[in-house]
Every structure is written in structure tokens, then in C-alpha cells.
Image 1 (cartoon, rainbow, N blue to C red):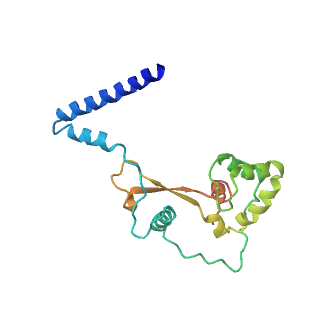
Image 2: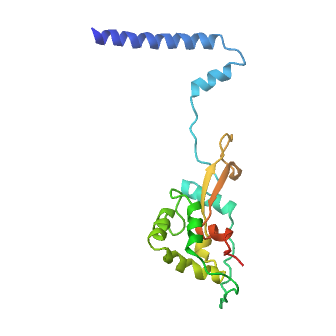
Image 3: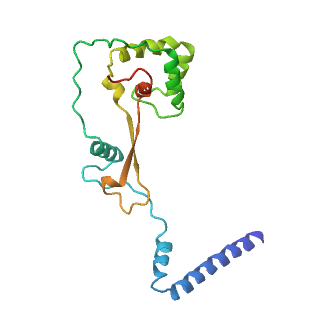
Amino acid sequence: MAKLSKDGYFQSIKAAKAQHWKSFLADATPWTIWTAKKFAIGRVTLRFSNLPDATSPEEINNALLAHFFPPKPLPMVPSILRPHKGRDPLLPSEILAALRKCSSFSAVGPDTSPYSISKRVHLVAPQVLTDLLGPLLKFSYHPVSMQKPNRIVLHKPGKPSYDSRVSFRVIVLRPFLRSLKGSSHPAYP
């Protein structure tokens, strides 16, 4: 008995919806016909763009990054690095201040270790990061591997088409060594 009541209830709802749809279409005007089209089609799913040189999501990502960040020639590494005179040594407190600005939950950098690891290492043995980063700042040398930021491509919401590179934006996450730039030890001369 309960099953028959349940089936009858859902049949009544289905019939009422069909009747309402028929009366809505019968009374449609040129201004409401587009509303009917939206209801009939449903929500359009977001799709990947059709860039001419990319078919998969990875190829699209690489094409967009190449467009926004064209490759630069690698800088020449000086054969002899000379220390800058008058520079104070890097202090663990400066590294701690830079690490406090970095979120433990942010995306990993080129070394694939999150800031939480650097924070933990500095908490346990503060001299480790000081010894690693001190010479880089003393000689004003910024290794190419530490200059490369993480870049993430996101689509701009509300664009009518995602077939163009201008329909996307790039978020760049800076490497840790640049966090020290505001201290008395600039990463660049």
C-alpha cells in the first residue's frame, strides 16, 4: 500500500511539472523564450580551451605558461665570485622573520619541500639554513634553480569563450630567497 502511495505521489509531481512546462512554453514571449532555452539546455559545463597547439590539459598549461612567460636566456654565472665588503653576516633571526611571513600550507617550491619543513629545520637547528643561505647572500649569487617560481594557470570567470590565452590568468608564487630581500641582505646586488 505504501509503495502505491509513493509511486502515485511521484507520478503526480511528474505530471504537474509536465503541465507547468507546457503552459510556460504556450505563454512564452520573445523575452522569455531565452529563459526557456536555458531551462531546456541546463547548465553548460566548463571545458578546456581549444588552443591551436594544445589538446590535453598539460599541453594547454604549457602553452599558456610559454605565452605568459617566454623563455629567457640563462644568465652567465660569473667564474669568480667576490664577496661584498661591508655586509653583515646573515643571522638566524633574519631567516626566522622571513619564514614567519611564509605560510606553512602554501604550494611547494622547485625543491618540492613546503615551508613547514624549512620552519621545522630552523626550529631544530637554526644554523643549517644560515650556513646554506649565508654564502649566497654574501656573494650576491642567486642560483637559477632558486629563481624559478611556481606558476599556476587559472581561467578568468565569466568569459564567454576560453579559446584565447587572454581568458586566463597566472598566479606566481615567489621562492623563499626573495623573502629575504627586504632584510639587510638583498638577494641581488
